[in-house]
Length: 351
Image 1 (cartoon, one colour):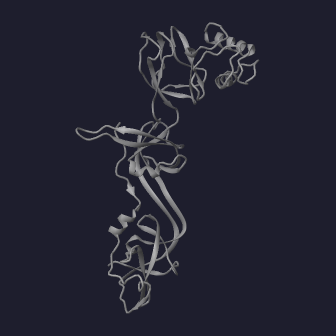
Image 2: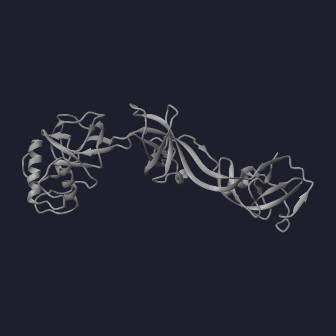
Image 3: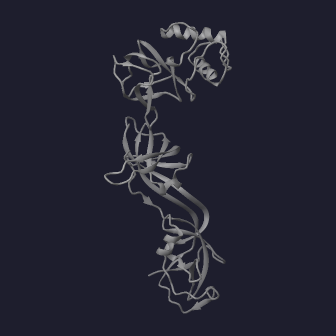
């Protein structure tokens, strides 16, 4: 699977090692004298210490579509007499395909059909089936996880309406579960084909548009399920979205290159223009946020000879070095904490 990520705009996420390489290094006094003041220093460039909200953002390229495809295999044997067309939507109670002219029906749920349901059977799978039967309008039974004679009677009515043999029992080959309605992506078989259990018949996706982004492993901090993101549409609109799924995919290496593991992020959102089934989009991730913190430009940091970092506080013609602890880096700024520092103070900047 080819990666769809291109070089995003990295909004100032800097490791301590990277900062050490990026900041201006001065010949500073030793630790004992580093907080003393000096006079008559001519600092040409200064910047203000600000108190603000600092947000670490990154933008990555993605694609608009219906998400990952799921293969649907036959649960029975027979001749394929009908398959849905690509792009069609199938809802609860409708046929996913037909074998020997008998429909295999879509029902909603997360538990696959794994056994025959008949009178006396109890369990979560029974309750899931009963909920679907009730949602389809059949009555006369209780949705309680027990397949009773009343459930069997409702099943017989359902089977009659489908043109199936009225057995009052549900075979695994008669139904298939999905979490919600599905959109047919493609046909994997053809009308007239003779198939066996396990033969792939169609591929399907969800019905809602989603954005998908492939991230490299060094950007995995961005892939947080439930995190809010911004989806940039081709027309320039930015729509709010949420990460709903995080998985992995493998990009095959070219030639002698090794395969690359990527993080596949699926984002749900609403408001996409009608008819836009596939398109290139951008996704803005928030990796970190700090509210009401003191910040300075990253370039104002000094690498202290005794270790760590500091800033050169400028007060008129007087300057002093103040050791600082750094926090979040973003947008060319860094969060700092240090004795006596406050918003509005000026710090020295490299020329």
